Amino acid sequence: MSARAFLVRGLLAGLLAGVVTFLVAYAVGEPQVGAAIALEEAGGDGHSHSHAAEGGDGEVEAAEVSRANQSTWGLLTGTLAIGVALGGLLALVAAATMGRLGRLTPGQSTALVSLIGFVAVALVPFLKYPATPPAVGSGETIGLRTSVYFGYLLLSVLAAVLATYGVVRLRERVGTYAAVVGGTAAYLVVVVVAGQLFVTVNEIGDFPADTLWSFRVASLITLATMWGVLGVALTGLVGRLYAQEQAVAERRALAATL
Amino acid sequence: MSQHAVAPVAGATGPINHVPTIPLRELAPWALFFGLLGLLVLFFISADQGAVSIPSGTLIHEWVHDGRHLLGYPCH
Image (cartoon, rainbow over all chains, first blue to last red; front, side):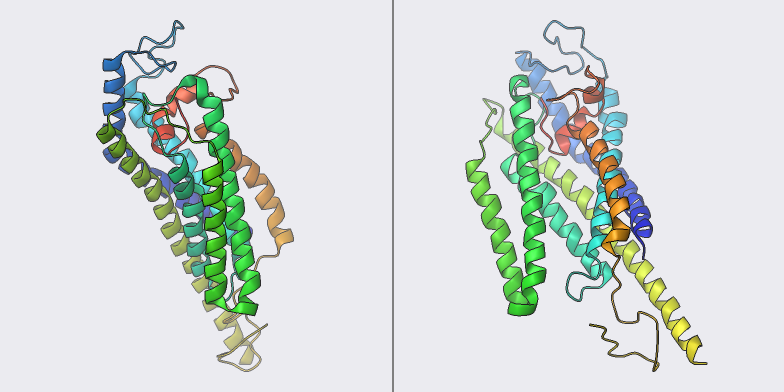
């Protein structure tokens, strides 16, 4: 069980997660993206971004990448790259936490890290700054929206790391149950309070609620697919590696006695 | 800490029933290099040519446009 073994498995799991996420996003998400862009074009109030076939705001930016490419190769590029990058990072975190989360086996600690990762990196930031379809979101506020989104994401991840560390340290003194309840509550207090303090972005305007809801559900399904496949695949690969290494160690131990 | 509770053989030397750990010193170079690489990839897919543009233009933004929207990153 080396860092390299974890990283290779993380990249593999990420590749798989990227492909599956693309399929799900294409099937579930693209119809919603298409519906939003259709509304945007019908509205014709020319946001400052450049979807294919949109007039744009003066620059020659129409159809730089066609919708057909954006919804297939472009989407696949995005999900694959994010999948592999997240997979590698997740695997290294799983490697660092192996054997350090109480008595959890490598597979169990990897699964737990994946779950915490999904909540801290994807779910909680989504609840504060939900995904927006094309046609929602002004080009003028992209700087603010980017900084508050990643600021909140960073805070959520830091809080999750500290909470997990706190649980591990407190567990021996107060027991697993109390430590886990305390750590989870501390994380929730931090992200809820920060969620109240961080600026709220509302640029929905008169965008139809049903399309918005469908898009956000599709987006959440996409994120859940990414993290779900990542976590399940990496947990399986790590668990198998540990079982193999244990079998080898047992054979060696037996051989040593002969 | 070593708890060979059900060690099948007396004097077993293998790490049986004991979850191994990777020393953080061994992990650090991997975390540093892949951490930087991974964050770079995440940046280019999720945020480049939005608030910050390296390089300037909109090609990267346009290419990964749908992924950005569906994965919940701020996009306009």
